[in-house]
Image (cartoon, rainbow, N blue to C red):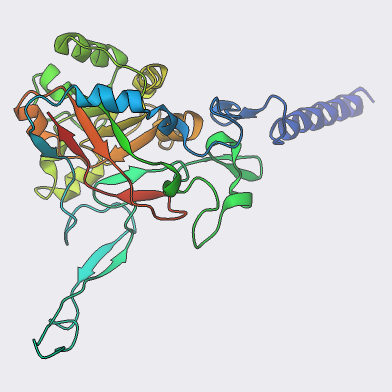
Length: 330
């Protein structure tokens, strides 16, 4: 009898515990525990907001950036989109020019022309901008993204109904380069090297500057030197920020974080049970954008640490990301 009661008690306790877990995963207006902690919505920018930290891009930031242009030197930070560039996973990119010439001979002036045909991913290959529809969290039975938007409600195979990159607008703001490779007197930081907040602070102190709300922060690790030199090793892992550094940057109010790596964060991760936790912290929870696979060697060579940063994602309706060629102007 006592054994039966004990078994029943275990069943009741187990069922009760399961009930708590299930109820905690129901998405509602109250408190909610998720795989990444407490619920992150509604956004501080409003329950309907789809722009996240892009809201920090203001006329004041444009004027602040303008004051940093003292030489008129322009740096292209984007990589060439070309056959053979490093591409992760099952993604692909192909550009072909059919026909050569593509069209027929036209008019008495015998005009001929060429057009290109691009196939594959364009938002998540090469130099790539991660929008707010790119990464979310599986919570209960829902896939939840920035501001609590559920993929079951805004997902569409022909373009997301919310959080598409067409909502982002233009970044014309102060840019800050944090050269961790230089700080560590290293040609290139190794795979899995976790950049700590202390190192970001040390770079800022070395540069005699500070972070301000709406800034774009670019982090150089030296990993970009492998681009089109050793693509296999480039894609097998990378140095990058950890969760501590990510929190330091979001606490500072930055709008976007970029790097000369393909994921911004350290791979392998600090905790091998996680999958791209920095992406979820920055993009999903805080609405802070990523821009990846940058060429930062020119800025580093000239020791440029503050500059005007300019970038506008392509206005691809419903897209999760965008290609592009961000520029820095000194």
